Length: 170
Image 1 (tube, one colour):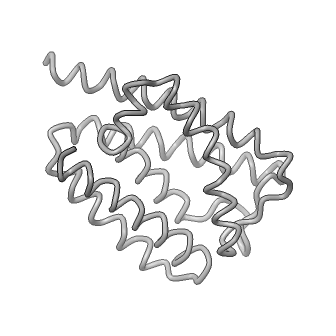
Image 2 (spheres, one colour; image 1 turned 180 degrees about the vertical axis):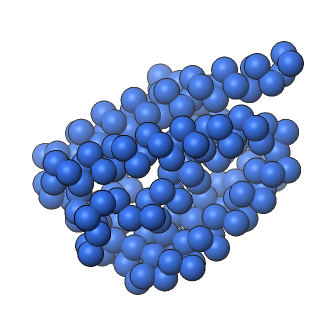
């Protein structure tokens, strides 16, 4: 495992904690924005940076749509926010920047990887709930979160693979 893959993983964990705990629970917006910087710099020096950027944009768009749908249907509530807050957008961008790196094993084994991501996705929201960043209305609704994450990660993985193979052939 390369140093850049390890750093990608570590920087995403830093981003998650900074967004959920820093911005979500304590209102420290600067912490969330600042935590995106290391993973963005690492991506800048990546040989797949174009693909990474495109996957991050797709991740951002898909993530904001599904998070706001969950808010609209009452599955999730973000305290003091009518819509998914900005730090959720940062998390989705960060997730997109991991697909070709620390999540590459899941990307390369798309079906199994998407199943794992889908199964564990509710855990991230429940952890965020413990920190006070989000409220999950009922555990019985978490399968919707799993299904959405499965679909989004499956699509992102296929797209990322296509982009990476297109860059190699070009």
